[in-house]
Amino acid sequence: MPGMVRDLSLRVAAPAHTAAPPPRVLIVDDEPKNLVAMQAILEGEDRELVCANSGEEALRHLLHGDFALIILDVHMPGMDGFETAELIRQREQTRDTPILFITAAVRGEFAISRGYSLGAVDYLLRPLEPDVLRFKVGVFVDLYRKTAEIRSQAAELARAEMFLTGVLQGATEHAIAALDENGEVVVWNEGARRTYGHPHEFMAGRHFSVLFDEDTRTTLPGALLKHVDRAGRAEGEFWQSRVAGGSFVARITISKRDGAGGTGGGYVFIARDITGERQAEQARAELYQLREANAIKDEFLGLVSHELRTPLTMILGNAQALGARFRSLPPDVVEEALRDMTANARRLHSMVESMLLLSHLETGHDVESEPVLVQRLLPVIVEQFCEAYEGADIRLTIDPGLPPVEANPTYVTQIVSNLLSNAMKYGSKGSPIELVAMQGPDTVRVAVLDRGSGITEEEATRIFEPFMRLDRTQFQASGAGLGLTVCKRLVAALGGAIGARPRDGGGSEFAFTLRALEGAKAGTAAVLAGDTP
Image (spheres, rainbow, N blue to C red):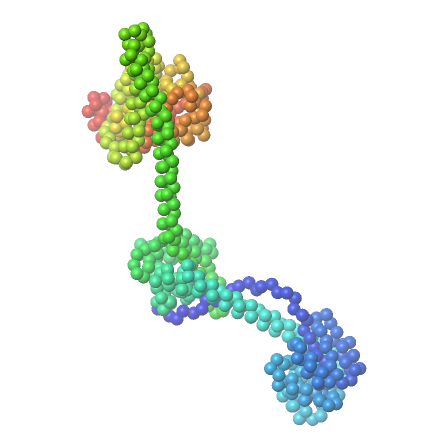
């Protein structure tokens, strides 16, 4: 049941202190020889002895500091010991200072009673026993020192408690609560009220699980406390609920709270609403993405404008030359000009197709897939590629019995053509290109292998990035660096994976996988295609 909120007792380490002055003992006697004798008996490094030869002088000393003990001779001329003690008791600062009376003889019970009523802690008779005097004074010196230490610690603790209480109530950006052993609230600061909306009176004695959203409040709070019991601390980001409705994410820390001041043990709960941080992080991420996209766009426009200008210039120059002197040019020159125009037109077409395809994929259009037999598609791609690129030497190897894959035949054609074109550009002159299709676990793997300059393991992780071209190969062939990026996006759209790696003996291997159709679907697809699954 809800109850009264009590103050949180916080245990703080005792601060370091500077060395305190030694306790002082005031000795009052009108006989100089008695003062000398008592000084000889009581001297010690743990105390300071102050002497006075009259009551008046003793009172003057008491105006300038505290004393652990006053040793006061009863029989003195003028103001005797009793009168001096009476004046000492009338002063607030010295009212509780213990007085040890010294006398040659006690004159009746009345004198003893009066002495004790004036604050005497004991009577000592002359001649004094040195050991007895030394022992009694030592007791009061130790008592004074310990009392002073306790007072100092109490003052420090009071200041620390005031400071921590001020911090607790002033920390309005953090919700801070003290929980008892059962997880019920015993302290609820102003920051908690602002964060959650619950007033102090409502939260008093309630279980802190009411702070969590409905989906987690029945299990998560208890699990957190169990974790704190084991590890001493739990922290993380959790969904919380406000009194006005709605959920928010808070960064929460829960730690053990040692019992002190009669409060028992329990936990300290600290939460901070990080909704603003999340929104700021999201805004920063979006701004970063926009800046990155803008930089990529600028780089893209620069590269594409350069790449488009070169073939366009070649086509335009050849077209102008042929138009002006077609009939006068030798046939071999005309044929070479037409070959250049065809190659550059094909290059332009490839770049435009890549840009359109990337734009299409970036807009998130769904990919239309169907059962595809790679063993049927690859020979057609190789034949078309060899017709387009004179002198291409492609060795095709296909594992028997490949299952159908779920893919888009146009996309597969584009991927394989791009990889073959890449191998043609950067492969070693005169060495064949290998195209291999094999079955993997629930996939069909297609690989293009060449014997060119190759790539390193580090380069293989970056080669599919947009506009990525290796410094040592960028002069081997022209291009905007979009072909492999297109391949990566197409393979991802088909639900597959693509990668590259160096080959033993030199060269590179680029391979991608496509999902194989399962069971009945694969059988049906193979029958429809005229193959045996």
